[in-house]
Image (cartoon, rainbow, N blue to C red; front, side):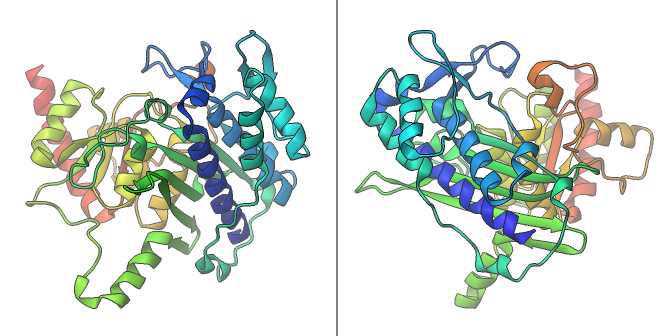
Length: 401
């Protein structure tokens, strides 16, 4: 299975290269943007867009994984449809062709006959990108490929990707918006249980060189299956500690000023915001992108990501969920947590998000929404006490309203 994760790493880096390539020329970039059709849209946004970069990245991931593991591509699903409409109204199915020349010819139809741009993108699509991690070479786990499926969000936080802000100042390491909030998410889960087992988060626009103005990415991965739990952050923190023992442990789950810390969306309901404000005070943060908010928990920048609305999806959470599980955390269904507490159920029964089930009675993209909201966490140590306080404070907030 580690071979599959190595391939997911490589595919995520190739995706990040394509995302950066598509953003380099603003005039060209405007050609790549298309408004999503009804049924594909996120109802949170009045206008929801996809870009050719989204579609290309998703198709490249499917193509490259299928080439390495034949048949597995049939079990890969993602946020985007691969249908694109050019300026002439011509509907084109975007795919990776057998040769770079054929892919360029197809992309030229999408890009209104822009030959130079089509060739540049085709080159990025067919380029062999190498990215691996020696730590995975020692991991040997066998799982039948026919029991593995994947969720892909080719470019999470598409609005921030389109807007392209690159001068946002972070608040305690957390970006409220901007290209830093853009992520490529690839997560694998078991078809029979729905539980996530592997995940990669690639942040294509993590840092920018002030001289060359070129972006550099970062990537994070995790594997959680049976008794095996391994994560890139655990390995990197061990290396850093060996290099500098006086630096102490990485700042991951320490509460700030004896308060919890959390990240959420500015679109969160008032009673939830009030509850989080009372528990976190100045340690409550806002950020764009579900994938990025999950990454903040993965990185240990906050203890929790809480969101009660149903406007996040399986493709947003599968990858970070796998990484958080490898660290001893997870992503739970918030409404089920609250319901269990109301009925005084044992909280040890963790209602983890599952990735093999549609929402009953839903249509379009809503079939794969996280209907009950979510809470992402990295530490079991703090989860129960936080939820106990959260439930008590939420009851007080509901009484006020």
